[in-house]
Image (tube, rainbow, N blue to C red):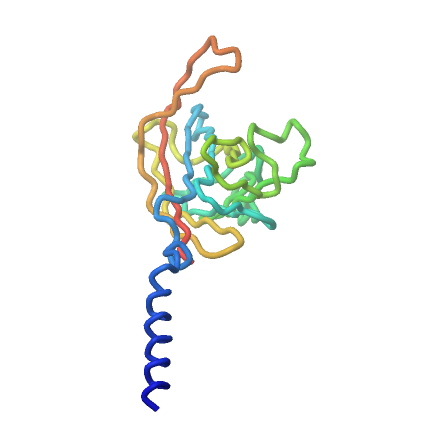
Length: 213
């Protein structure tokens, strides 16, 4: 009887010791991994702006089919006049517009990527992969990045008038994401392909979304 009790005790001690070697990554996401979303206002329009939105997958996990979805709530009564490299899933109620109908009048639009077969004149750089994003590596790769362009109206066309969208929501297969608020950051600098001209965004803000289970 005592021998059996000693054996059981030994097995229990070994079991407890083995728990120390279970990797913490199996239970918790790496806090440094995230989806970073950056808005660059690159041009003013009569009633708004043109923005390039770029998403960076700073995760070790890829985004697989059916791909990512990005939504937010407009701060005012903005509309999306046109899109490049993406589409709004719902147009919403645009009945007050007569001559030119926006791509989306939703207070909370949802944007998705286009397919690789999208005509070239509807694309922008790093778009149109069906919402797929490779995992990030030690050397940044273009397929870990997804971009699209929006022409936004009814927003005002100065830095004072433009209000940051809120309640960002990033969706992708493999769990939920929690997004922080948009924050204005230093404006992005651009260089042309021939490296002979430098330009700067008119305004830049950033949103960080983290995998939450």
